Image (cartoon, rainbow, N blue to C red; front, side, top):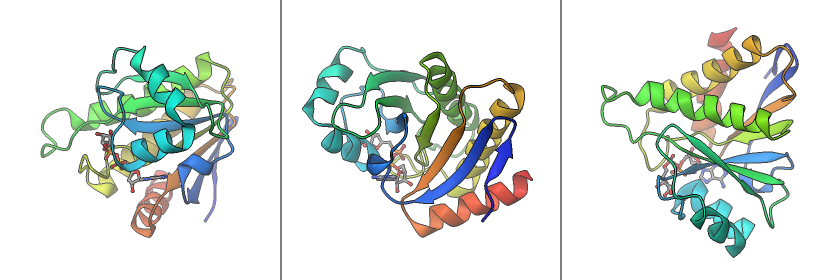
Length: 179
Ligand code: AR6
């Protein structure tokens, strides 16, 4: 498995639990309330501690496709970027654009806050039901395009963290197809 180096930015794949990542920021696949939930959202809130929920309460939610920043509290990551992916409704309700926007807005927020290393979960592919192959193609494509269009970016490392083997394989395929 090769990493993808695009200008300043290394795109890489990892298996495991995003809450343990030693990066400047981890991305949370949240819901519009930002008040916690299951999946990776639940895991991040458990690992960060109750201060995270208190910080999220001050943000007044987040629209689908948008992203907001909090500290990481008890996490190794200094920050959490909370983004809200689309619920899969057959693909004809703007899901692809909204999912791409999650990655784009997260990268812009990272850049604006001095974040150099960033880890993403596979947004929308769990509880929200987005087909894995389509979601990973959008994730890799959007991040790749961002890196190509921002040769002076401060973001040096972007990791796609895969919680299971099927997700890892889908990202491997997306990396191959993007080359
Ligand atoms: N580390 C990395 N990835 C994880 C972890 C973890 N600790 N736990 C789960 N995943 P999901 P969604 C993977 O359902 O589809 C919540 O209730 C998981 O295997 O967490 O965007 C929110 O509050 C899958 O590959 O997020 C929302 O209501 C990926 O993370 C809703 O779920 C995303 O699965 C969001 O649903």
